[in-house]
Length: 323
Image (cartoon, rainbow, N blue to C red; front, side, top):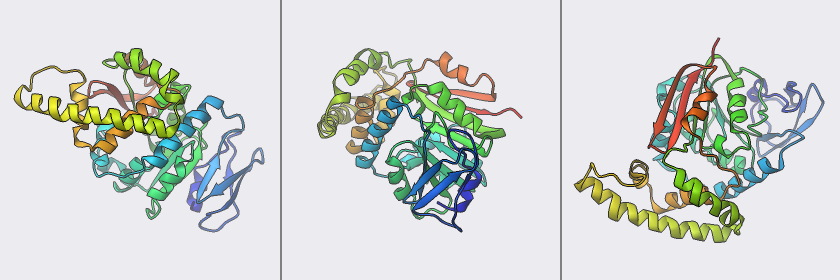
């Protein structure tokens, strides 16, 4: 980590300022809270600022995703377009010279893309050991920092970011609304915030069929077994898209098929990426599917709100913080 990061950090317990005894860069060492005097380790250039009372369920979910991103750690060219789809109406030029927070950075795929758009700094935050995957993915990118912390107790000073976004993470938190409020609090007045979450609409079959299977069976399988199951199901999905959905869309473009918009959207990806998507559905302990009205309620106190239905299965939102 570089010393510039200290200007953004705060203790997750007392909100005190964070200091460190180093000149420009710290790879291994400690940071200290000037308020409660807690110490926080820095490992492989990633500071860990976790609250003392970290929830068991939160930590378990983070561990599940850390295992996922250590295995499915590829970086793909398609991620650029996908990232911009998820944060629409934000465009690349919006990032210029801004200080940005990626709330739930996973393996760092969005950090890499965002860093190319000219921001002053992009900070990735995640709870699990996936932060080291993200750090490795962005190792030679000068305008990226990675922090290990809790989205429910973000380790940042209030109002220090120009823009924050969270993609595909908030719905895996025990309290998704609190996570959204936390990243919004880290935005300065007049700054912007984006979020993308699973929608309930058109996903009722997942809630009724896949969720019970995940909670009772697949979420408890040994990880190698779960990866094998995901590989098999991804193969069925891969060939269904190519043998049914793509030909039907070409010959009968007006034909209604289940989840057509979404499956045509992911048709660009190879089998390996579809395996990641299936694994993502079968693994986590927590997955909320939010109806539009619940998602819209998050934005009630924000201005210039734009809510969009993405591929008819998920919700994305963008807004300005008043002030």
